[in-house]
Amino acid sequence: MDKNMVKNKRIGIMGGTFNPIHFGHLLLAETAYHQFGLDEVLFMPTKNPYYKNLSNTATEEDRVNMVCLAIEDNDHFCLSKEELDRDGTTYTVETLRNLTTANPDHKYFFIMGADSLYHIESWREPEEILRMAVILVAGRDGGGSSSLKSQIAYIMNKYDADIRLLKSPVLEISSHGIRRRIKDGQSIRYLLPKKVADYILEHGLYGQTS
Image (cartoon, rainbow, N blue to C red; front, top):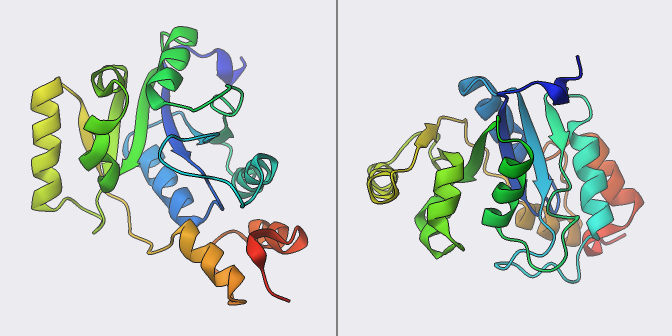
């Protein structure tokens, strides 16, 4: 049977600009997969997020290609173009509505960092997001600080939400830091998969110096 036809699947959603994707993203998704018994994790590149300007950077095609290269050897990681295939600014609530309408038997687990949970009330229709998905939140220290635990309790109580702590090892890697290192001519080895690093070099991304 085609795995996409299986009902009652537990699906993780790993969203982001992935500009570029790196080992921090991959480790977080892999940890969520095992800790919460997920069937698969969707890597979902964002098209035009309301909170970030993606101009003067890698193209949408580049970001998709890098994600594909990064996850090709993991059969429980999948690319989703759900947000890329929509016009205009993308919002998480619309993504979850589309997914839950198309797959009402599936349970969705939205993976995010602590910073996102602190700001989730500023997102469009946070109550609907919290109704449609379980939130898996990763702390900066690999666990849950007292501040993060307080925020989890506050959001859970206010919105009757299901929020769970994602206990992932911490890698101090950021896409911004990688782009800066490339621009400055510094090594990015061991920060992201070799195939992704090779793609960046071959396509001259991020203003690299010769």
